[in-house]
Amino acid sequence: MADTATLVYAPLGGAGEIGMNMYLYGFGPVKSRRWIMVDCGIGFGDMETSPGVELIVPDTAFVESLGDRLEAIFITHAHEDHVGAIGRLWRKLNAPVWATRFTAEIAKRKMQEEGLSPKAVKIAEYGGRVQAGPFSVEFIPVTHSTLQCSALAIRTEKGVILHTADFKIDDDPLVGAPFDIEPFRALGREGVLAMAIDSTNVFSEGSTGSEGSLRPDIERVIRECEGAVAATSFASNVVRLKTLAEAAAACDRSVVIAGRAMRRMIEAAVDTGLLKDFPPTVPEDRASDIPDRNLFYLLTGSQGEHRAALARVAAGVHPTVSLSEGDTVLFSSRTIPGNEAEIYRLYNRLSERGVRVIDADMARIHASGHACRDELRAIYEAVKPRIALPMHGEHRHLVEHAASAKRWGADHAVVAPNGSVVALDGNRPEIVDEVETGRVYLDGSVFVGALDGVIRDRLKLARQGHVVIALVVDEEGDLLADPEVRCIGAPVDRERPLDAVIAQAVDDAMDRAGRKEKRTDAGVESVAARAARKVCFDRWGKKPVTTVIVTRLEDEED
Ligand SMILES: [Zn+2]
Ligand SMILES: [Zn+2]
Image (tube, rainbow, N blue to C red; front, side, top):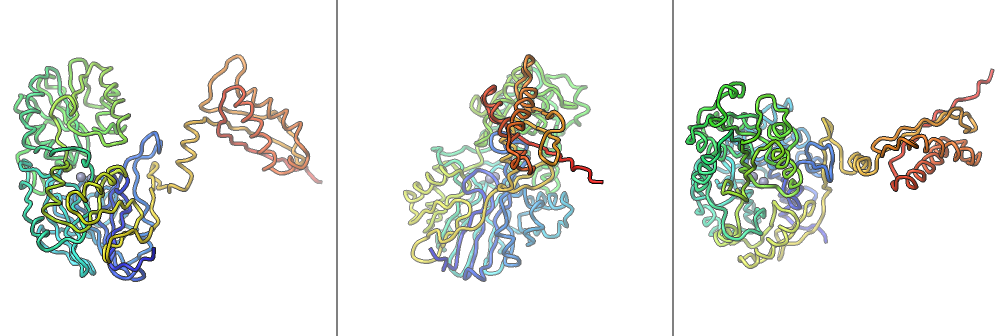
């Protein structure tokens, strides 16, 4: 497994999860290889695996080690899982960022939010070519679920790579041109060595259905509602927001946009001239003047995000929007794998307030932005890639997609999880190396590494509870006062409080402990922790995280 390749593909994020997309392509001998990055996205934390974490980004240690051998960063579209980390990570990457106009507008705002100059973000035109070291990159329009989405044709001396990014084949996208397969056929004629391709819907037969076909169904659903109606969708899916707003306006409802992220996205789409004729909206603070049956709210938070507008409405703490008996919430969105629990919790919160929830399983109010199997097959038939590189999927998606790719005509298909380096030139593609990869968590305002132990500790605290023991000892290690104990996240027993029982057990253990052990703080800590954990296990059936604080008072010598 020696890396003697000239052209390689190396995913750092997105090949093993749906989220935090980051893919690298390299050209040249390994020591002096030049690189480009495609996409720079984020993922979100959840209570199960990363309690308290706001968002997750790929570990970029490998890219940082490249220095100026990273030629450029290409962003395919404005979704958070593709552009979300560009502001936060740019200082470490330090390369020009290329995107089409709308995506560039979003990327610039992300740079500005981090105090960076938006000048690093450059606008690419469809059909033009951007030269980045040994790579020539062309943006090709695709339909998806936000504006100006692109596939990338990456040309090198060793062959052409097509990076489809997220796409569907939409004949009636409402905004922007219908999907045009001709550029893909042209690439097929030119010859495509490898195609990195969206795997999100590889398990879904048929096709996704167009955006335009949703409009009458959404209008019918809204017309049947009596109280206030709110709809949630991704803020970046501005076309859907427009469809929802138009359907609501057709039902005599005034549209109120609640949530900064959503307002910002619509603004960006209108500012760039891409989104026209968005129905007039009413400011949030004026909504209370309008009767419920004439109100329609657009809210962020379709994935159950705690701080988003919808979660706050469900908790009854939103400053301007309140929903109750007789009102309806439409989830015009899909559940991203991993978010199910949070979303169902939100459904139930709303239900408890008397609010009816309608989702895409109950009515045709959402069409996926990702190609289903018929659409994937059509792309394989047009492009005829020699090598398929399934991406944008969990491991099971990549495996299924690789198996299908061969049936759809690819000679080779490689399941390449995050961190693998795949040689694309040579007789057959193979994984020839691995680079450092992993996740970095944004915890509050600080980035913590997956191996820093922060998340591991937090999970332990969540599962096991915490006992703190403070001991004051003399030089010999004998207790000078009763142990002080605090239990956090432990069951309450009023008859025999756990902290008192632990204090007694620690006291006894210190009496029994040997002189030598008590002479060091580490020894004292271990005696106390053992005693506390034993008594907790006996009485509670658990071994909590135990912290022992030792204060050793020196003898006075005068
Ligand atoms: Zn995506
Ligand atoms: Zn997307």
